[in-house]
Image (cartoon, rainbow, N blue to C red):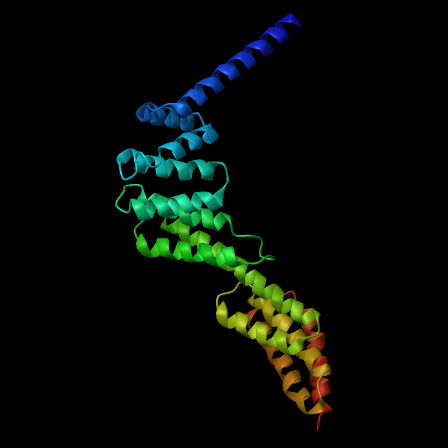
Length: 265
């Protein structure tokens, strides 16, 4: 018990001494020493203290090699603390203030990557996703020979897939709401917008169902073209995906559509 109390007392003493040393460094006018201590805090992963000292040194070392380091490591501190919005701001600031720095390319990628990390789930507002796409495209255009180019393109693909999923869910939502006209238009636009979509099989299945239900709820003069469109989507699905799991379900719908056509004058 006595040993525990002694250890606890020593930890408090060390912490108190460390705190006093940091406070003295904050008030110090020796900026060179303050810079070295800030970098030491960064190396020891004490990003909070490093940031406090970096902030005090920004104006002193602006447009100098140390100022370049301070701006870059400030961005890194925020990134490593998962404050991606502020990190993106400082990485972007670095590329603007030090465009010829050897670290400019890395900062540009990190700016785009932080924006990528801010992209939310596809069910939420995608403003941040569009901003991230813009940043990543700018990086690929500005650094076409970068070692990070492949990674940037992978991130772009991920973001576009997220937008595609959101659009696909909207199409399905229109269908579930019984707004068949909007659903059809949305499915058509989805195929135009994403010609290489991985959802093509599901979209054709959904469109066939939508056209059938649309026809069922249409005025007589509009039914023929909608039943025919249903059959057309079924035929396309069976041609492109002969092993599709959806064919069995659509086959019965297609038969119903053909019978309906026989009774239409």
